[in-house]
Length: 259
Image (cartoon, rainbow, N blue to C red; front, top):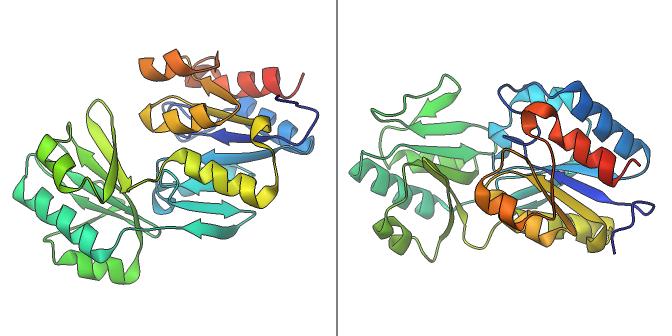
């Protein structure tokens, strides 16, 4: 049974959870996180973004115990990487071949160091992304980087699912999908944190809003949905907090840990 008097761990999604319309974290959220840590609890980011796709401004604002990035692809605790799994060059190349052969889709290859883009008419390359011109670029980027997540535009078609069913887990959103190495999810990252910190599973809280948060909310003792969550997340959550715009993370931490 959850016991806030014991050492607990809190796992926070970023987009739509910790932040809303900008990369600025609210003062209320920062204050609640700091107070939880001051009382001996541990607070972790658990994001679908790869390490290289987490903006520097978030690192600068947050004082945390660690980060789970890439939907479980990498875990850092106290600044040390303790778990990491990336996509092989062969897998990256095959996905590139599919995208370049089906240009109605755009794709973003999120790495440890950088973000790489195959844009199309629906989505231009952002200024922080490096352009990919052909599948042969897989050799170059995999020689210098480690791809953790592939974001793909539109609803992923059945032939893509079939083609990569043994290689990728796909998390579908309304207008895009996140693809990671088969079997990875945000709960896997939490398992690794608990294994290395000794915190009990019954003393865990996960807070999120979207489909790739489902596994961690289900795994944690208390799964908290933001008020702005997708309906699937609202339906399965143990508790619904305020929206990201209303500092719902702070309200949940206050209610569950700081009373």
